[in-house]
Length: 99
Image (cartoon, rainbow, N blue to C red):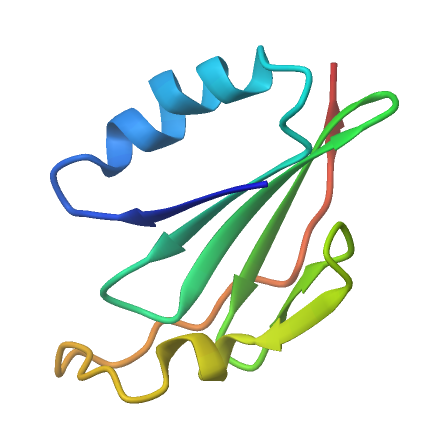
């Protein structure tokens, strides 16, 4: 399991180059990208048939079955002063497998 806290300048690299590198490593089962300026995460999970992508926003829960825990997104951001901009609601959770 790999966690990345995305920074404005490097998020494009994390979502493309690093994602491809991590997907090439058989030991990586889950890649979690956490936004630093809003309550939001992208979770990429290795499945038997490919990769599953999940989007988690405000009110959601980050499940990590590999280590047997679930963490509400609000807890991950508790105590952080996010920008004054309104929180962007996450889209309806979606899952798609790609090969």
